[in-house]
Amino acid sequence: MRRIILISCCSLKNKASDSACRIYASPLFKMSLSYAKTLKPDFIFILSAKYGLIPPHQRIQNYDLTLNEFSEQRKKIWASEVMKKLIFYKDDFFIILAAKNYYKYLSLKNAVYPLDGLPIEKRLKFLKQELERIGELCK
Image (tube, rainbow, N blue to C red):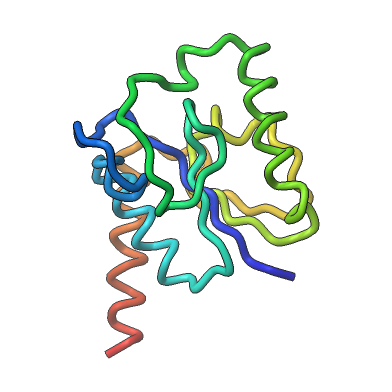
């Protein structure tokens, strides 16, 4: 069973066209990506309001869109499109580092949500503590 990490996009973006991992600029996104890499997953994907499911190194254009602006019906359609891209991974294990809007309509059998229900400040604190703990283990 492969380990796949899903990270949500963020509203704070760099202005240029670049790889997704460089466009998204919020501290939460950056820490989530750093944490995801320490877990040595088989794949990391970003859940993007505009682009759906994308790998971190896919080149994208800056945009101004969030799932918070979507109706529930539009969120379901977006999730359905994401699930079409995840069809080959449906039986794998997922670690979701995303806000609930980004995963609530995804049909994933094997998933954990370590940031679930936490406000942004507590998400950042959790990620910082985990990165520090992992850093200590690697010394």
